[in-house]
Length: 128
Image (cartoon, rainbow, N blue to C red; front, side, top):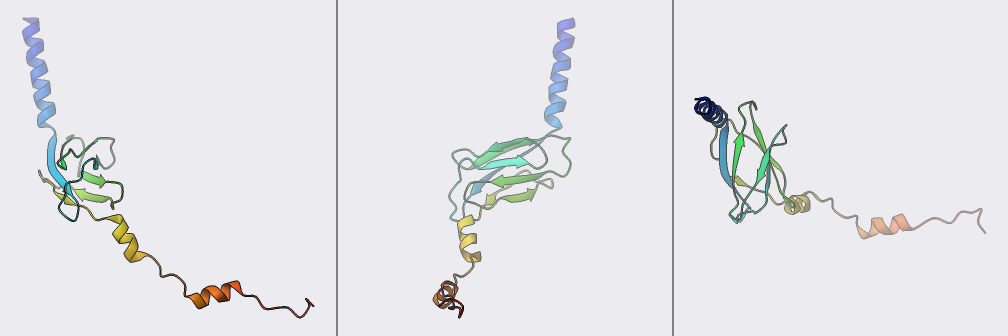
């Protein structure tokens, strides 16, 4: 009888822990629509997270204790993105290549004349 009661309590505890979680699924793709493998997805403010599989897909269980969850998507060479879950069950993400962003925001190089003037110096009358 004790084993039956223990098994029942274990099942109830497991059911409540699963029901208390919000499962979010989705996929991460680049700007060309290609799936990205190994994208890190973390629940902001926690150590919980996952990575995308070989199809760019992910599944993440968000504990009920996390209020207003925000997912942080990060991948080398791409800009990180933060997306509020806001009750969504499926979140698809298209990333933006960081290199392209850096190229568009890169300062223009100085002109040749400016470089020459930096390298030139006037001769002082004290140096004869």
